[in-house]
Length: 540
Image 1 (spheres, rainbow, N blue to C red):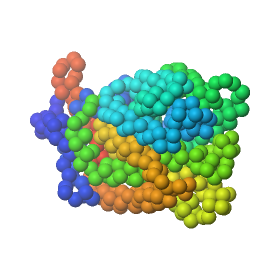
Image 2 (image 1 turned 90 degrees about the vertical axis):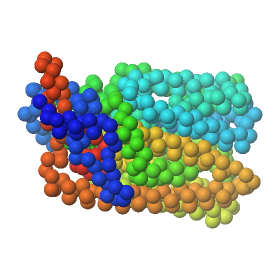
Image 3 (image 1 turned 135 degrees about the vertical axis):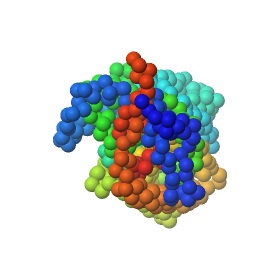
Image 4 (image 1 turned 120 degrees about the vertical axis):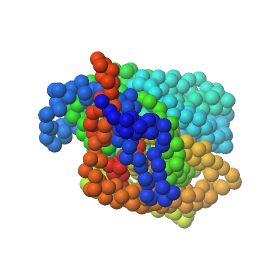
């Protein structure tokens, strides 16, 4: 039976947030929080206890664990990539539609087109509040409702005949798509250790920056060759919406809510995967209870705000994704040719992402350098767009492709880092919310930097992107690295002095006797935050 001191610690854990000093580099956390009520522990605890008698004494070799990871890579990762590919195809349909007759059919102007992009991200920003309720629901069911809804909205784009109709559709498309990436990131955190996740992040994000451009480029190229009374852009919307609905069916059948629900793993593989992820991450996998103190802690943690600033600054350049086809045309490329240039740029993006994945795998804990690597080519391309003579169209075209297709490596490295450097399910969802709001607000602002009487060179837009986006974001990443390194030094010293820091206790009620029972468990099962858990080591 648990003694009174344990009960006092448990009560403290449920009511009070983790204590921290006024110095952000030196976070103090209460050691009492290693005692947790079973209802507030990791949601996979019941699954582990159910199968402890079968596997608790078994050992798993690194080779066997590698085989489990390979099964996850081949069964889950392609599905995640497919979802993100479709989402970014649907998100950028307006960019391709702009060269396929959209302006004529709906009486759009360049200014109204920029406004539509801002409206999309207004919906995205408001929809980001869904991150705060996502924790309470089954991830698989939530995802499928969202995918079906966004597919239907893309279908309805084909029926738009004016700016007003597009405003409504773009707003709600942004609203429902806002929660997709955070949801998929949570799934990755459930199935991958921090090290494995860092390697897989760039591969996962090829579905956002490489494949969508290539696939959409081919579809747009084909639509432009269709001889039909229906404008090519409407056919383009119908195809995208139809493929999204098909993906919805696939997700209903195959998408797992968490590792214990993964159809492609055996019970033994599920057990050891959960154990390994919790051991390596020192964090919980799933927990549906919203903990108010974790919300407060997330808002007080300076790292949360630095990641928010990182995202906001970097995404000031994101409207370049929507502007590039129009810029290709202004450089003398035909509408048809611009789809081929976009296709080549998408292929370059995918190769750059795979190159980044290789670097992360062989040189782990170097996220800052990945952010810098992603931004340097964009800086060079941006300077070229400002400095090179307008008559040198081929060089400008090369600079445009370079600037638009590399900075994403910094974004995906930062997004994954913001997730892996945070523990506690509620805190993680709140940080996702902050990151998503920063992403949405920045993308509301970014189309506006292309407005005004800037001529064909858009000097002001390029300068804003170079200075406030591609230079500032790596600086913020450097500050985050400095703070987390300092925290890790404190953690490693603490762990060396307290060998029991890797375990905690769960308080349960015996169903037969009604007595309180205390069980020792891995610290990762307690759903503690990174500030509460002194054994949590921040990935760099």
